[in-house]
Image (tube, rainbow, N blue to C red; front, top):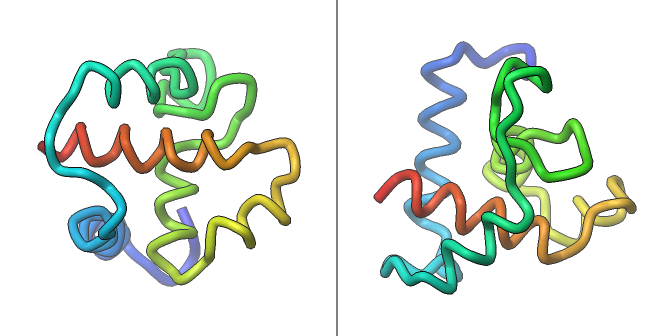
Length: 100
């Protein structure tokens, strides 16, 4: 977690971002679930079981925090060149589905 924000502020920022992000569809579909499940995983031995992007140690929470704090997808991809646009989309879909 970043310095300067307590966990409740962090959660609020992330939840505010998720609920206001226009490109995340609100309806649940099998396709949407299938898409994120191919890219997001939970392993109790990695980051204490937080959801992560498969093949990385980058948490869903971290990517959502970046987006909530104004990072563009392009900026994330530039700073994390091993990630793909589909990884970021999967994070968004996962988060939206978990909030529903």
